Image 1 (tube, rainbow, N blue to C red):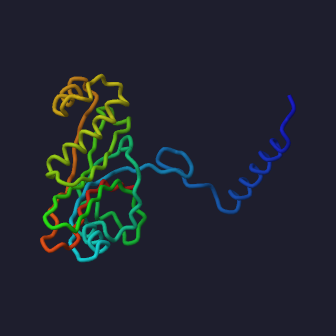
Image 2 (image 1 turned 60 degrees about the horizontal axis):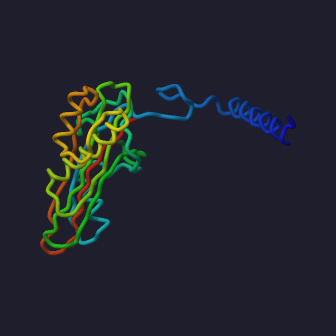
Image 3 (image 1 turned 135 degrees about the vertical axis):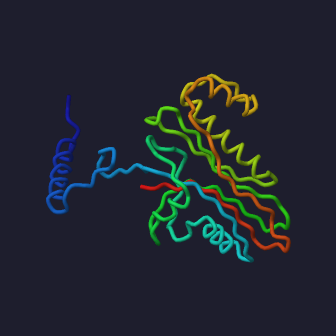
Length: 218
């Protein structure tokens, strides 16, 4: 079979460039899982906050200050809770953030400038009983829901995503309380939780922002 022009030459050039890079700069640092150039969070903490201001952006900033994470450069990521990741208290977690640090998080955010309008932001978590498996995080933000309703819904989202990956047989049309019983009986879902921030819009029409975050610690 004829070789495509450049296939082997390209591989040799890549290998040569890689050797030169290692000689000049040293090997790439290894992650906790041993894969060069990758990293997996070891811990996570949950936090929430609310901010009120005439300017929308400042309202958001104040909500992050209330949550204790305003000094970080936050990068939002998607919904996987890593294997062997532990949950630490907010008080402990915020001490691990340095000013300007690139910090990965799962964030739910909602805002309004309508007087008395109810808003909520919530993060849900579902963890498998086997800590070597990954779990799920969900983000939910809504209008017109109480904090409890928003939190239950976020938990439901995370638990449902996890249950489908674990192959649990359940009826998605059933109420969450009924599905939780299925999870419990199967013995595969160890823990579900949520953190929620809700608020009513400021009476004078100032911007009100609520945030809920799951913040990763590397």
